[in-house]
Length: 232
Image (cartoon, rainbow, N blue to C red; front, side, top):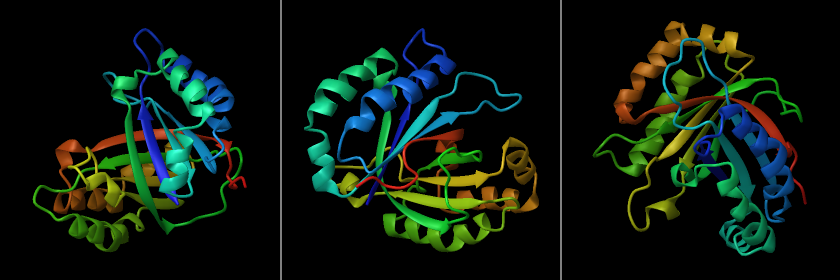
């Protein structure tokens, strides 16, 4: 199963709330969800944190589940994509800023079954491996050593590491090698966790296998469009 992640930002002149509303209520419902090969579809809308300054790099992300590369290619050739979802993108998104990654998801902490109307918040942190570190070494460290520290974070409800698929390395290096996702009850629980010694130890460990200057984190709220159960 391909777990595709699409990070996006508003087109010039569009506010973040309007961008998020259009994505969740118009584009996702009327266009993208019509693509028959998509099995599950989730929108993550950015939550601003107290004291934040400057413009965010991304204001949300889409998570799309596809069976395999064959069905992914078929999805890009459908009328629903070519005449629906694709031409709708410039109406709301700065498509030149969009970042797409196809990943393999590794569930480190499953947590309770997801609900149709999630209330948890999550962090989505884009990872780029340390210069000179082989891809296999980066993946092994993340899944074995670093995951031990992640699972010690207080208040953690679910944990996922999504590693960029091998096919993205055929002609060069993708911008990021993966995405780490951590779920908490709410923003207060997230902020409490971030103040903990366990979280600080986890953050300090990132320098052992990642280029920390390239870390990029999105705090988000989930909105299921297709799911949480996959459609036939």
